[in-house]
Image 1 (spheres, rainbow, N blue to C red):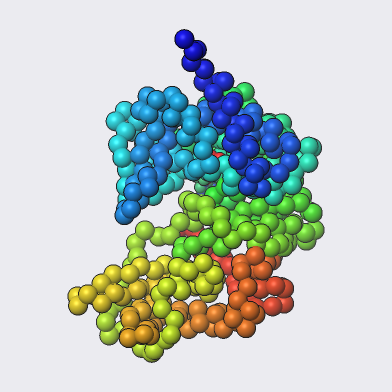
Image 2: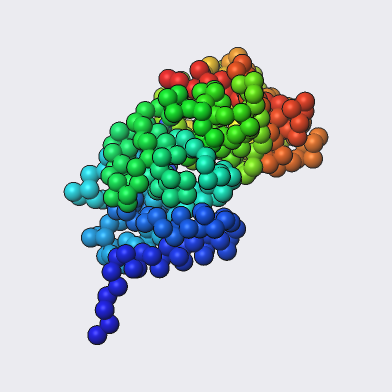
Length: 402
Ligand SMILES: C[S@@+](CC[C@H](N)C(=O)[O-])C[C@H]1O[C@@H](n2cnc3c(N)ncnc32)[C@H](O)[C@@H]1O
């Protein structure tokens, strides 16, 4: 009879396979981070989670625990390169009767390891550095940093007390005792500053100035910028001596759940009436908003906007683009091969987008990685190729608060 391998042995084999996978794809590039991936038991941070099912239609998540799917399957899933959801809509999951969930909004997770590891590599830490993490989540990425740097050099902030408590338990079980703070990570951690590195695993609409103030000059901030329509990408900023920071978008694809304090207002407000605004023809349809590069430009040009499509009474699809901070709107409707746009309010949203597209096309339609960012205490801007080139103001810090 063959002996059934125990959880620790099976998990160690799976960790080694995960590390091979991450290295093969170029995410895991250095021996110290490889050692961390091979050592930190991710399954301890995701004892219970939800995973997305592949079924078409409404996004649906199914619960996973060792009891529900069996120890082997639970471990296999814990060591796949997937995001594992641990909370929806800011509420704790009722694990006494776990059910399939759909139409919900994930608010905490263990991020897919390839993204965690790629960010940790991009952080370019040295042995004696201190790190502030914003968004503890399950604590898995915190544990990787503890393994790499020593827990005494790691501080992590989580805004949700229940999530933070679970992360603390998991970190304790694994023998890591970093400094854990429950609070709004947008304020950073003045008591522990200055830090050598700040890393955010929730998306932000702007770089909180507190992070710049709390990072040692010459050191880095790594975060994903995003708006209410989409992500703007992963930025790495170097902090200057004069309370400023500058850097580049180093990858366009990562998208994190937005910092809770910066989430879009739930209420969409009043829809514009059919007689409001002025109408013109446009060759740019709503697809622009969803396509990778033009969607990026749309997010820059309309920083407070959201959009959705719904059919009018006669079935014609209307795409509404609504600014959440004022009454500006653009409504797109198909008109043969072209489109009609009706705009109103203090800003002509579609005009702004088209102006940005002209600048972008004139520059040869470069990808987001050709954009950079400058932060001063007074202003944050994203620019194309050079700080003197075309630029777009980033969402002002105070406007993100509700
Ligand atoms: C994608 S999860 C973090 C993943 C985590 N690093 C891991 O490895 O498990 C994002 C986390 O950011 C937290 N968060 C959102 N806004 C925050 C804020 N303002 N300050 C601190 N944490 C925040 C969320 O509650 C969520 O737990």
